[in-house]
Length: 284
Image 1 (tube, rainbow, N blue to C red):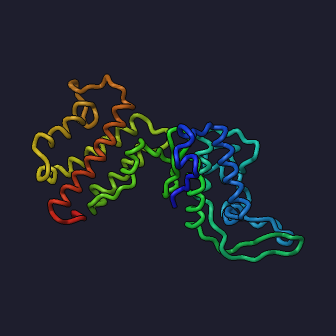
Image 2: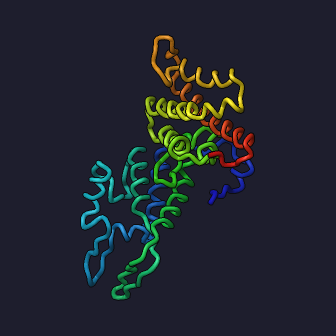
Image 3: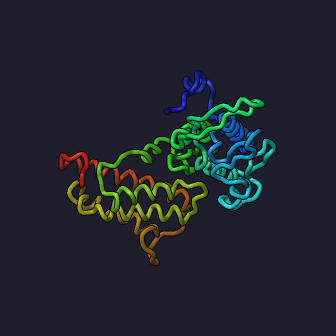
């Protein structure tokens, strides 16, 4: 479901994009967590307190604090407190962690004695995750250059405006081992939070390898010179191989971002041209 944008933002009455600070990110994250917690979306994971049965443990066992510390490799992040001062990395870790353990309560009973509360026995994990993802993406999209929680539960960069649609665009090819899976892996590697220069170079190198695999198809739809230029770019700028003739004195952040989108868009264009030429929308 696409997030609804209200009047001022939708009509451009307010100038500029709302950029969230880390302080606002903390507040929005905590408010979102509390909203789901109050609706018992973490009861399956955390368990509940009962006036009759005492502490009934959930999936995290009798000590959720230690359980979370083992999973996150950080002390003091969980349980989440209202006066926390988490870093950006901490918040992103917690969002991914909560995504793994949230589930929507479906069926149970209300324990009336002393107004004990709801005790659920049936949960829908997928539904809970989707609702949580939609809620956090409402504000992650406006934090810094824009982030999102993916359907795999990873915090990923939204990408450059006008080009981010390539991340979710379907390829007109069904070749998971040689094309689709490799492209998806390269995209995830490039978009991950705090991806390194080497991560990004690997992502571009992986896309160049996909193009190399598709080279026989390229020869049928583009000129010989264009085909040569595609691989000359990667070879000359230290992407695919390493030798003394390569150019390395450039801003790698800028270059690698350009190269990544260039190769990703080229793969899409090449496969669509091939599909059109063969008359097969899903080229095998």
